[in-house]
Image (cartoon, rainbow, N blue to C red; front, side, top):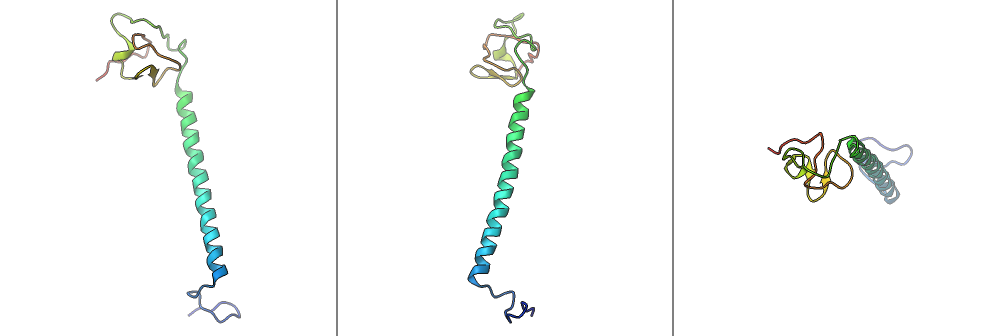
Length: 102
């Protein structure tokens, strides 16, 4: 058995202050993990928002183009949003990224 210096106690025996120190240490570790994980999620959310383009860049128009409209596009999100284009999207609009739903 290993004994602590000068105390004659084994490591398997724990005093109340030692147990509290371990608990505080564990809480700090979990808090650090939570902060890192939360920061990663926030960065991912910002990256997703940055991947959208403006309506001008997408050549968006609020009317259909040759029978193609946003409501039939795989990137359209009901009721008025798009995975690729910023802003409010008319379900009967169109842009250069139009891709038929599968």
